Image (cartoon, rainbow, N blue to C red; front, side, top):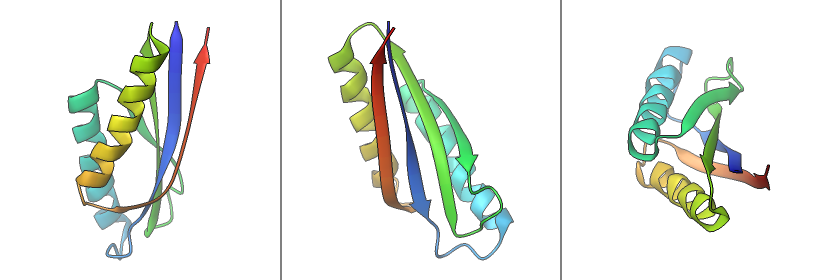
Length: 95
């Protein structure tokens, strides 16, 4: 079993309240879940309205496929143009 997981950090300069931030992040999370069938959640900076960190995880049996899906997931999040990505981290482990 291969587990790929990571984080994406977003800059949300256009958000001036936590309500605006939640709207954007919930949209990003829902779209990623629908397209990639990945586990996705906001994992850090919950009380900061101009930054957000989401975590994601993908499980599979082929390391190359998991890596490819993670790269596509990050590219998809960037192409949504709902928020600027300022950092990404990912790791793949074989269990």
